[in-house]
Amino acid sequence: MIDQSEKCKVLVTLHAEPNAWIIPNPWDVGSAKDLEKLGFKAIATSSAAFAYTLGRDDGEVTLEEKLAHCEAISNNTTIPLSVDFEDGFSNEPAEVAKNIQRLAETGVAGCSIEDFSRQESRVFDFNHAVERIQAAVEAIADLNIQFQLMARAENLLRKHADLDDTIKRLQAFAEAGAHVLYAPGLSSVEQIKLVADNTNRPLNVLAPFLPGISVQALSDAGATRISLGGVLQQYSRSKFISATKEMMSSGQANVQ
Image: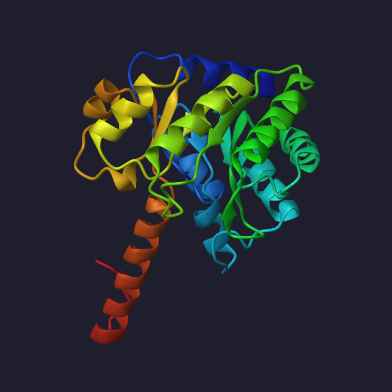
């Protein structure tokens, strides 16, 4: 069984790849194991997809539920698991640091921290956002493993269309020690190139905002890691609903 330290090293190596790669998002242990069997080198949780499995909206999962979810997936797969750790389950830097240390105990290889308060539904002020990443970096330094921290600038996703501020935040997060950068909501090759040209860390992009653009085109623009968010779970749900509707309307207890 590959240990956590080795999983972290694999994730570090992937982030150093010259070409972009896809990191799919399972929603439970079964889907995670399927993705591993299909040959993916790493997987990442989706806060929205996991919340759906509990019958809730994104942002309504508790810290304890998140930790249990991550531990279950990590213990049942041999590839790195990166975690959508939302806002770190606290507004306060010190609490975010403690929560990351607890997350690391589940065996995962990395996590993302966003600069958006789920409690207050607002993007954090610039200085406070940077302090939270600094605290997370300090917590990771005590782990003695190559745990990968991805810092998220949420402006675009939260309908604050300020790309200049997004870049400023990503630059500051990198300066604070984040290993990977992420601005969910980038919606064009031109935007990706602008962010990549003005930052110096591997860049994650969210595929649903970039329909029809190939992995190679995203890579050429400067993306390193391509995540899918809740798309796979949404697709699974759509097929499930379609099949059950067909059974109800046809009177046949089978699925084509």
